[in-house]
Image 1 (cartoon, rainbow, N blue to C red):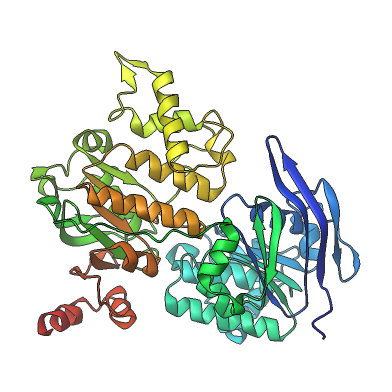
Image 2: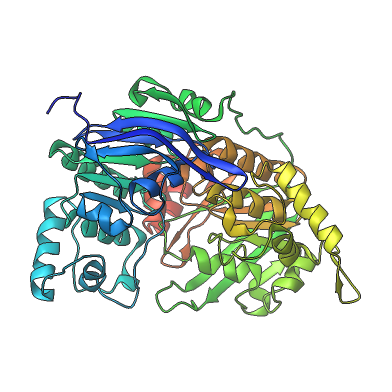
Length: 510
């Protein structure tokens, strides 16, 4: 095959919604066997574009050609029949079913369970993504769940595979395995459209890139010939800000966990086991780990959604383990969970209502049992302005925002309430480089003002950039924290893998 061949060509695709043009005359093409990146900041139009390719959205104008013939998918079923498959950022799996049953649900005409199980084993082994078709999905790690989604696509023998933020829940080792799989698919002639905010990954994997800004194509390039910073600046159209922090002396212990053990409320979750750590005012503690090792449970135990022994959680020396979220918020312990829609924000409520949900106490948005709607709207407007949330206004529903813009709203809403202690889980997940830098800067500024900040994240680069100390969660246990400065990738990997005793001995010897 020559590089001039086109598998998929987009010509002048345009899609508008009330108040915004999501895609404006977008044109580019993907050749067979190429790994093509689609880049852009949050709200640039990437999601709308791939939804049109996959049959979830119809374009207002323009056309698509697949192997030179008109391509007009009305549904994902049409797209799959034409050889287009997609692995979404958010998994669509049933935890109570096994791997084979989940794969069958995504197939038009699934074979018998025995035949399907055999095919899953064969294909997963062939592409270096081994899976046991009899295992229940609820028992799988995030990386293994992604394998289920990928194998489900590969069984359709796709000619074009769309990957949306595929490495956001993977360890560095799992990323390497995924990249080997994608390179093998590419060598076999499968075209891959790859969406990610991790620009070093784009440079390592992709051979070509289309960059969107405000719905328009602003550049086509070979990302291997650009630095990550150059790619980021093409996406945002301005010089990228690098987070900085003023040197400040750490204060007294703000939050102390002593032997915190909490059973997970999720039957497929991970219980916390004897977690002990202290965080001082002005300090940023980074907590890393592979997804599913107790991150959600740790945030719930700190926010007050899950109660613990009274003395297991102390806020400025006061036992708060038996206090609920509102009581902890009143005392200055605030939290922002990982799941944006449904946990951090109510999807169908407006941004004003969502500002009220967590800001009522500290922003004085209730008086004598009556809601102060004017004050709540003003608070939402301040969050929108200060954190550059792209939305027509605070009356719009949370679900109308792109993922990155909703993340900026959620994080900004908590930071602007001036917490004494702030706990955030995945603060920049799915957020573009510019917005990620702004969120990290806001967290550093909060620490500089004297707050204790705990950042739970699977982005190791992020943790190394902003943390004073680093600890790892593994099967519900927290490793002893170590200074983040000077930690190597190998040492971090050992800590994430549960080699806590080894790390303590190593650190002590050092």
